Image 1: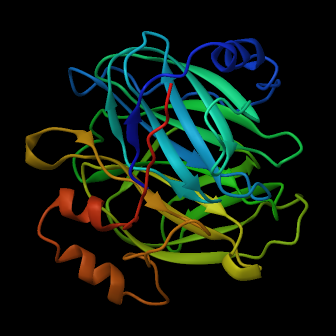
Image 2 (image 1 turned 45 degrees about the horizontal axis):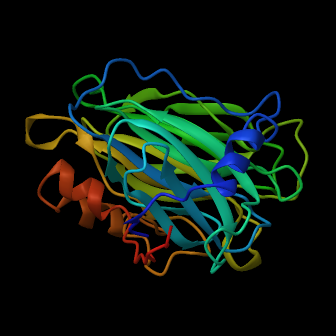
Length: 305
């Protein structure tokens, strides 16, 4: 899902975004983790994610208040995470509309983002259709310790009120992460792991434990999206989305991914055994590993002011 730039919307739609932002962020909503100092200079980096299980495909619009060109992501389905777009630092209004909506259609979800130069953000729709909200998360671009990768969890499986995520025969990443929330980042040993996502003890829901084989490259940062299983499967799906790669001597934002129904490409690092993970290790660099985690065909449309 590759966003494209478009002229900023003006008038009543932007006003509606501003007026509704606070109302659509109830108490307990996920908040941005504190990733520390920026690792890159210049523009900000922004991507969008649709993690509301019972909402259809949506268009996600990032409109700057400065009047400069903005970004629109078209037709995002549940589980989709777009690639990053470079945008000027500044204030943005975020609107979510049903896919294919005409320009000027009142958004069903709104929020705002203050993007700072050199920082990266994921604007994510979380929750269920009845209480969906947009949460701007700051992504961590600072390097993890040598030999380690950095991860956080986005809990977006409606079939589990809370989830545990851990590496089989490895470290625990999070316990009891509530549905529609984001954890803070944590460092784990880099390498090939089988990640297991399961409903947390004492929680509710019909989801079952699910596993995914992944490669977490040293010096890189990932978001682990936990979603409902595809095609009605009861097993939870856990998918690594590359946030940043430590290749070429610096830490830079990486690509995006399709984790669910909206994606059209098969995951490179998922599978029932080590074959996919081993293939990824042979990619030749941490940047190639991060970019190959997921391939996402994207489309964008130009929106008229």
